[in-house]
Image 1 (cartoon, rainbow, N blue to C red):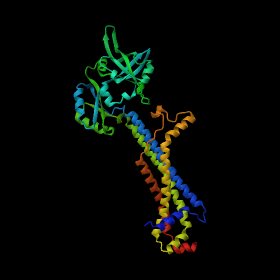
Image 2 (cartoon, rainbow, N blue to C red):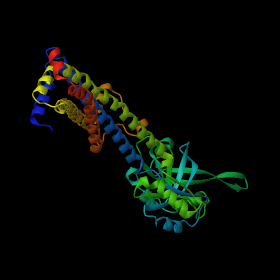
Image 3 (cartoon, rainbow, N blue to C red):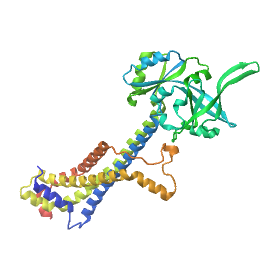
Image 4 (cartoon, helix red, strand yellow):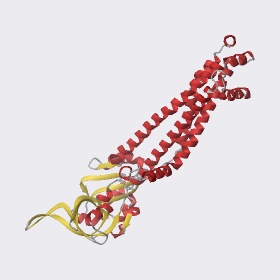
Length: 417
């Protein structure tokens, strides 16, 4: 169908040196190609940045998030047996017990509110990647009866303490003495400090002690407050939650990570879809600029079309000539955009770093975005879809001019020439 004759004529018409419009049609074609290329490049770059943000935020949050949590209003007594039952689920990789409660920490004349969590260090490491965030000390320093505590970096700074210092932990639990009702308190030694450099706020609010020490501090006996689960696939959390509801019964309260972070990632996905649609309109506008350039070519080349028809060219052949011309222009713009988009996506972080250096200000504040640099992640499947969509838009813009060319009548065209 696309014989060398059709390809030759189409490539000649791309230059479109029309005697009526001189180089104006060529200029319009060039603008259309550049518009498609620029739109595709911007679309690829923006989506790569969005993908980078999503991947980096997931990388910061997922190692610390509670993927699935099992709780009971009265606490969980026979939790070792319950752990064995939960581990039978195919998607559950690890389970760790947890005792948690609000407290006040006092040291050096300073007082700070804190969320104290009692953990078993080895099991906790299986469900939460704490080890990689330890700045001083280690999780193994938490031993039953040692009453050691690991603080967040900001919390330790607020209290003015360092590793080896003593602090007082006050809990809402009270005890009755001959002199009246007083809150329960216990001296702990700071055995470690962790530092999570993002905007989650964990550094300023979280402290870890051993599970046995937490049970003694909160007068819980052998009970725990919850079980934390780690899954082989975080996206299976809603299904695991439903399965555990059916298996454990209605007395348990089971939540998954989407309750805390689901709306955040849904918002990112929504922003990504809206940006895609908005930027796709830029590509569509540029692609449909091809209509004006091809219509002018058809009007100027009516005499040539009439001669081709008298030499035996069919209306279908004439239509294919202009379709191929539009396809070549759309393909050129798409390839230009893909190349430029990949280049910008690859060097986006470096470009932003240079701009931040020149402007002497942070364009990506960590207090908002969890990170202080511009991440990018190129999804080549997404790039291929963008390229195909841009090419399809450009090709669809040529349908009307091509159909118009095929409707040219030789006698009328030669008479008006």
